[in-house]
Image 1 (tube, rainbow, N blue to C red):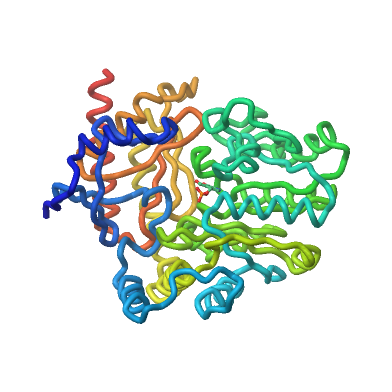
Image 2: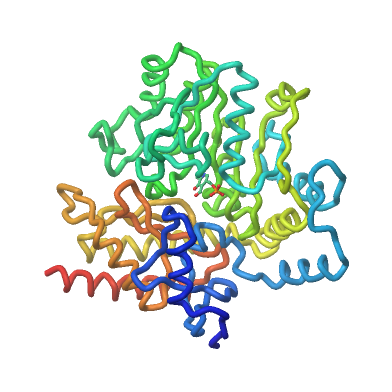
Length: 441
Ligand SMILES: Cc1ncc(COP(=O)(O)O)c(C=O)c1O
């Protein structure tokens, strides 16, 4: 159904050009204006329906405008429930949320602070780790991404996101656990976890031998859904702790059940993390993040003040709690596992047919498809990746992209996606890849 919008799409583009910072980028040659969302679908102003397989950017957990969340929001507004309190006053919603969230955390992690975003969650994690250890150095991973603030960008493993002349002090980078493009030229089946051991070499060669923290995503989303093996994390946590650091597990993308195991992937992979950060799908689109940490770290922060004006406010907290309850009530983690496997299988079949697909990887419904011009040289298929996105959009499917070179298709549909919708995605990929191959030959 067409929606009457105040401003024409072309004018919106002009307004953006005129007044937005040039750092804001748009997907697609002919940018999309999205005006409605329901479940797995989004709609533009003309009423064109798209299956949303990227969810803004990895935020659509239980579906757009889930009726239970909608109802709860309407009820809160009708009851004149307070929009903003900040943590200087008591309120029911953040208390309910923290109780539920801690019940999903790995054993020993029982303290929490809410933020508005993933970047802020990581900033607080860095500050807590530095405060508790009295050390400054944070070890990050090349190809990692942890947010758009100054501190998180100094831990960013992508030149494209970093600003010029930005101070990058007190951090150092270890080599990426990127099996498809192993920096050690190893194969996963025969390697000796050289990437994990490199964290130790990095500490030994570029720090004074003690660190504040190590930060990593259990699945490296923006880096192109790089999916390290479980053993990698076990080896790295031992190293991090040996050198006095705190392990920060950035679950901004992988959390909230997206990987089809526990609510937090850190728990499923048995990562001995000291701090876990989350955002994105945690609020199903509402701006809320969280930092979870072990009690002994939290205790060392007493006497300090940390204030985040909107962090844990009632409406966001309610939406995050409802999201958690819906994930449980609708058994969405199980669905994520099943649909994730089904989608992966379908994509692997397409990989047999289309040589441009170099790798399919991920966990649950956080999936990456790496496109290459040649499977031997693994030359990045950058233009083709952008073309594939356009072809899919023209056929009613929205997907994302990432990777250092922008040659990895990223998929993160709602956890409630069904088989018919996955079949639709696979059909659209098949058709689009066929056109892409014809155009290339
Ligand atoms: C793994 C990871 N951490 C942190 C962030 C930053 O989150 P936000 O954009 O909410 O600040 C992102 C955003 O994409 C992310 O992917």
